[in-house]
Length: 288
Image (cartoon, rainbow, N blue to C red):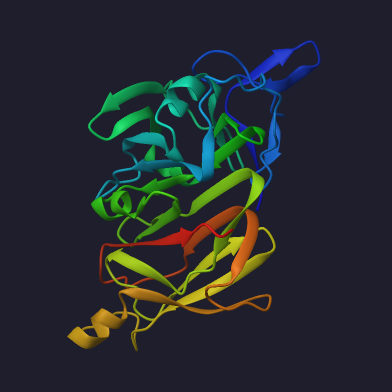
């Protein structure tokens, strides 16, 4: 995976080597980082009142994208899962917006908002640049300081329902009408353990007989829609295309096995083009 650079840099005596977060303050991340290894900048030691991040905690960022042309600007909402509610508020000053690669993206300044879905950081971005964004949040964990990062995924009611306590969810999209594609990438400063899933469920559209990949630090796994054709028309074939089923990995692996990783990425390689959009997601159980 290509590296990513922070959109806003703090130019000091030695040049732009420190990033400036978008809500005030600064962190010590370098101007260019690999998305698989976001680094662990120094932060103050935990105190008894500091929020602690539980196992399987992650940052997620999402946007409502249905039927939006590439020229549109869209609202991006970032929040945290499997964490104490106070974590995002207390860590908001350590939130930054970066890119996977290429030129910086012009986004609005993130704003902390509380609504019926809880606390979240909102900013506006051009839709055409969403797939290049990578957001980062520095938090305090029981093991010490750590950084969580996430790309943008599509928001649906199904994606919201995937966020079950103690589990990790990823959602990816292909918009066949406008050519928009979003991979869901999650990064952790320290490796975590998850179980390799058997299937990836389709929430909108159809997988047909097309493929998806679930990637980790040192392993890439293939999944395939179970319909006989790319655009199934018969009811039984359409149902088969509602899942991408595990096919194997580029290293010996079986569904259900434990995977130790600091990066997980879901990507849809294809779907039914007769449907405007294919959106699919997966829930990974945290493994001991």
